[in-house]
Length: 188
Image (tube, rainbow, N blue to C red; front, side, top):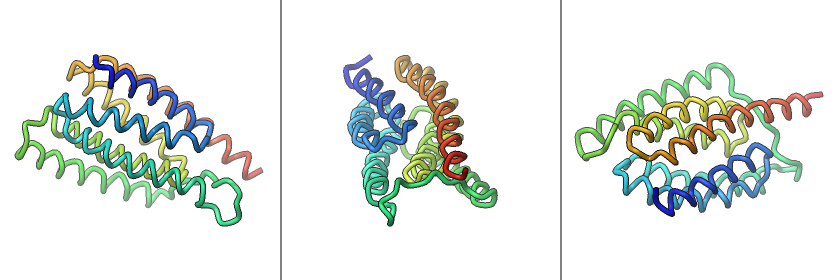
């Protein structure tokens, strides 16, 4: 367990808690958190996860901007949902990209668990993008990603990180319930 893993863990919990509360400060906390984890994952040879942190950094910056400036009438952005066809398209596209990226990492690097790592990469990007757009379905994506991540990080002896993703799993369930409730309140 490295100091970077500890910093990333603490900031990860704080950042997700802020997201659940739809607090814009979750984005800058997330920026620091993903920078710390980029270093952790690179050291563990989970290259897709390291690349993921760089992508997260960019999406976090966009999410911060979008939540601050995305509403035309200065009202907070509403929580929305994906239609079934759009959800199916995201899932199908994610599966194809995961398989392709996993194959590339398997053939060209010494990546540990390249296909599972690719799944985490692709579906985390999808979930993060949906979160930046304030789409409720992001939380269901995080539930699936976190389930896979718990096993991958445990297998790579990243025990604290595996525990963090167990906490993230619970937070994702809480986030889904909270955002769903806010959708119902807005519709009433």
